[in-house]
Length: 399
Image 1 (cartoon, helix red, strand yellow):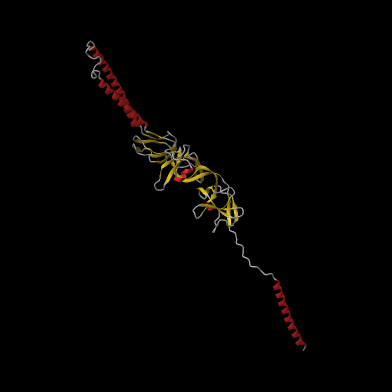
Image 2: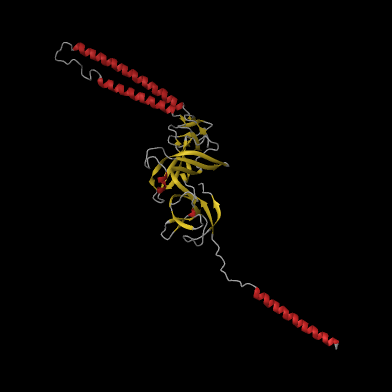
């Protein structure tokens, strides 16, 4: 009987504990504060900005071109003959000084021709002297025979005075002297000298070879200066001065020539000297010529045929800002604008005037002030007056 009572007691005790647990849970649930529904905050777009600092900036106009010599000629003999001497400098790539003897032609024939011409001059001089003596004697005889005849003219007739013979003798003397001068000149022409300081680009003659007048035997170019021809859009010429092309009479704008040769970076100074004058009908470009003095003084030199970069220093713009191109946008009116973030973090659209574009940057002439924070990172959606958050501040671009 006692066992049955214990089971009944345990059963009711279990029911009591379950009831107490349920009551406690209900009580705790009723005491828990009610959670209110809230909208999550919208995250602010993160932008990268640059701090503007206006300053005076010289406009740099960049171009590319090939180095050409200022002077380039074909060396051509003016007399025929066999080559008996070549200068050690007279090789492909050889350098020479002005008036240096480059080549000699066998002068024997021309020396003999000079001797013969000199003999003809002596003969003509002697003949002229004899005719002068004969003419003087004829005039004297005329005066002796007709001195008492008042009707006769005082001077004898031209034929009696041998005037035609005198004129012919003088002409023969002049012709002999001219022939002598020509023979002397031909002898001098057997020696070919360098007309300027330069180098040999191509030689096509050697000792023992027979050359003829008008036959090119080498190509020479001057090393006194070199020129680079650079095509520019006609609107680019407003930034720098081209003598006799753009307004003004001052010297052409300064230029920097940059080249890579023999594993070295070569930097030389030059100057704009002229424009070729005509606009290319196909490209609508104008060729501007930059000259470099003494291009072969450096080692390595600014060699002819080298492809180079040229940076021309243009006029200076004051109170302008340099910004990356990524900062520029356009509105629905196709106006140039930038996004400026104020001190409170609000984005504003600012209309600007771009003076010049370079490789990756642009020069802003109007619409930007010192201290403006300009957005240079992209945004999928941007509205005037929206709230943003700066992610990274950068200093203004330097070029």
